[in-house]
Length: 442
Image 1 (cartoon, rainbow, N blue to C red):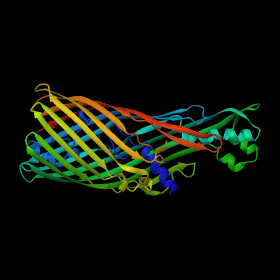
Image 2 (image 1 turned 180 degrees about the vertical axis):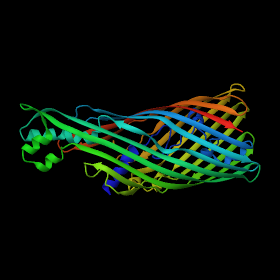
Image 3 (image 1 turned 180 degrees about the horizontal axis):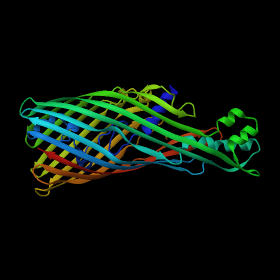
């Protein structure tokens, strides 16, 4: 069980979270979302993801969209552990390709749709200097050496760790207009997960006063501590996790007046089993080959409101509630104190017949136990602002472009060392996303 929890923590570490709320789910699924941060009541081609039942309000014919996001995120960890060479660790996430593809066929009261996108994961993180949880035990050995009358002035180690995670979703929807103001939708999403991990710990050495730099492996072998020496030999890790799952989706759209639109959507929990295939794990415990463990995508209840104050001015509100506590994460779900939620507000204004400007705000709220928050996996509440525009090329083609920035609330957790006492790790991050998309109607 301990190994499974560690794998789940490593998996959550490398989830890309551009503007998404849940611990696992990405809700940033179009350039239109990036520019206004509230799309749950959208009546547009990206409603394939956000409001499937609302697709019947599109004009008859074919509708297509291809959008891409470029995501920059830095995950920052600061440790006050007194024996470390440096207190700061940064994981760089760079996602140059984050695509979403939508296709809709609408005829009379029926709409059929297909959607493709990275519904979770979507990028890679690189910690070029490792993580404090990897380095702190190495730094602590200085205390043991001092007890053996081998005082040190420092240590050196080459630590590197990177992970790549992507959950690709293939979604199929059907929507039907029951009345002029009520429509319903049903869909199914096939989710394909792949996580890759690679890293190493090389060349652990200590600057022993009077002896100079000495490799830990050589030192402990010379002292006759063979088992201890093996623990300080060079270590490599390379593994992959894969799995698939299905997500049933139900939706409802109400438009009692032309100026008002309301939506509801429920995505059922996706049962995900990930199987580990290990090429090398010199640590012996991070990635047991053949291990199968659960990492479900939580169920989601979504609601949205779209209101036209006047033909050129529209307001949007979106609410998503993620049933994290009901997912199976091999016990990690017990560290969720309250389910995650997000609230998005957006507005757009038609500057003229060609240009529409938009702004948005998103609040993401996590409530997690302090024991969840570690450098192997942590989540931070945040406030996001976004803006952008839609440019109408002609009656059939339009472009969406937007940017957003996420302001995170840092989190500090206390740790305790038997000899050095209490110290802290502080988790923080920043995210910038730019997106562009083309929409085409036949």
